[in-house]
Length: 316
Ligand code: COA
Ligand code: MG
Image 1 (cartoon, protein in one colour):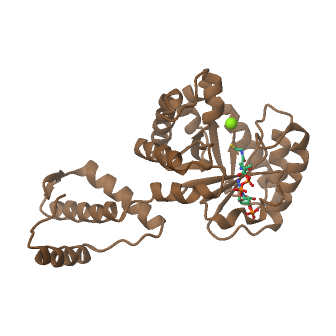
Image 2 (image 1 turned 180 degrees about the vertical axis):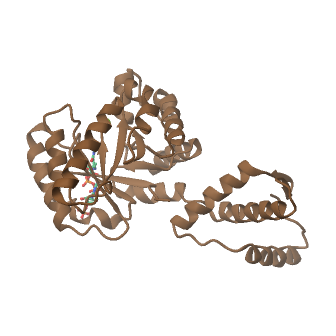
Image 3 (image 1 turned 120 degrees about the horizontal axis):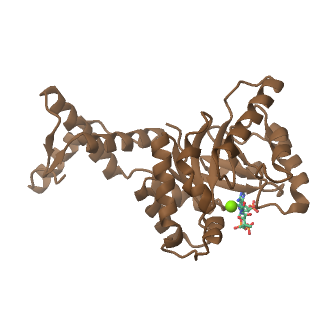
């Protein structure tokens, strides 16, 4: 599984921000040619980003992507022509409203990969829905291209399109957020949430990230390096969640050996959906290189603790 907990936007026309962008620990960086760059600076930003892709070493592990301008603008096609190279991992397409918006980018990228002698299909695509129309078409969009590995929601533009208000409870975009995660899951790809614009408000960021994690999101975009740590903390499984997941996986394995699909763990029943959730927690922990104790280690610690306190049994 590819971890995409955090996705840092880096303005494509800010030379000092680009070279260190990979060092802050974000899973994904998105060099931005769209809304971070004013119309008069689009061409210069494109040059800067295409050069940076060739010469900057963003470090190991980070997924290097570019947010292009929509193909409906005068810049979109030229963005793609100039950025496609062997250092580019992915392209974020903004303001996607229909599958055609993605298919066109897919075809252009394939054409360029062929012409430039690059492996076909290595560059991934990500579609951002940020209009009512885009949100309502999100399932068709999510399954329209093999290159598509995730869909995202653009909270600010969507709120403007809806005529709602961006508030801390996120009510204006709540249904849209749910539709995006439903579409992503139905298509078997990832769902990545929008930015939290108040980059000095860490508590607000944590609350919003917790909300979208509970909704099923895989990650969240950010605009400032300081936001990355909070986002990772929220998306990483906690040590307790990891221990519980190991116990669940072990319990369901024991049940399977006995020919059953259900078993009790502490005071709760464990069945297939619970086991599946546990598997996801362990996959996340593994991808994030978090420590995963074995069931024997957990039992040994629990025995020591319970003999020490005189209390018996866990409370799962
Ligand atoms: N990417 C890379 N580096 C960034 C960064 C980003 N998005 N945001 C800040 N930094 C760097 C700064 O260059 C500075 O580096 P330095 O210490 O080496 O000088 C450091 O992080 C601290 O930055 P700070 O002074 O706190 O913020 P700022 O006033 O320089 O920048 C913003 C604030 C909002 C202008 C800036 O974070 C930004 O441009 N974010 C991206 C906006 C964007 O892309 N929007 C479009 C998508 S929604
Ligand atoms: Mg937008």
